[in-house]
Image 1 (cartoon, rainbow, N blue to C red):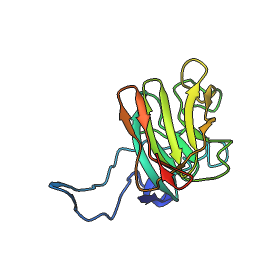
Image 2 (cartoon, rainbow, N blue to C red; image 1 turned 90 degrees about the horizontal axis):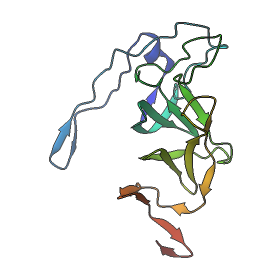
Image 3 (cartoon, rainbow, N blue to C red; image 1 turned 45 degrees about the vertical axis):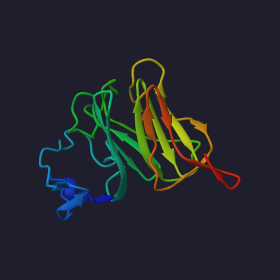
Image 4 (cartoon, rainbow, N blue to C red; image 1 turned 90 degrees about the vertical axis):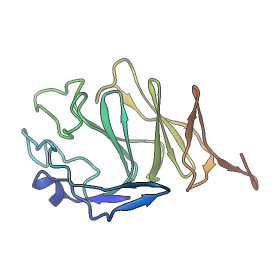
Length: 178
């Protein structure tokens, strides 16, 4: 997990203090990314910063031409076709390709843990709720919805996986695991 602060975004860099990590036989370095787009219209009141600022990011994904983050109870998607931009591009309208920053209205503030892109849907998982990010037509800030699809108590350290055209996730059920 990483926490992104407003200072990290203010100077155009998204930095981490991760050491080199080893996972099995694969090593990787986390390095600064210095190409984040800055806000070009509005201010903190009229064009709010993305909700992942000063919050913990629990998952990172790419879906429908957008870079996405899960942070607390929010799903944040970049501008379509521009993974570097998490700000609105105009104050006069809300274009379909603008960034999306939405919380599930039915998840009652529970932190989201995992996002699994599956065709035209994005399955999002909290500890005991499964959400399907959808839209009426093209995915846009005006059409996006995040309703609860089911309520199963998942296993916190076991992420869901895509299996063909399905998503499998472990869950608890009256003392059993399914």
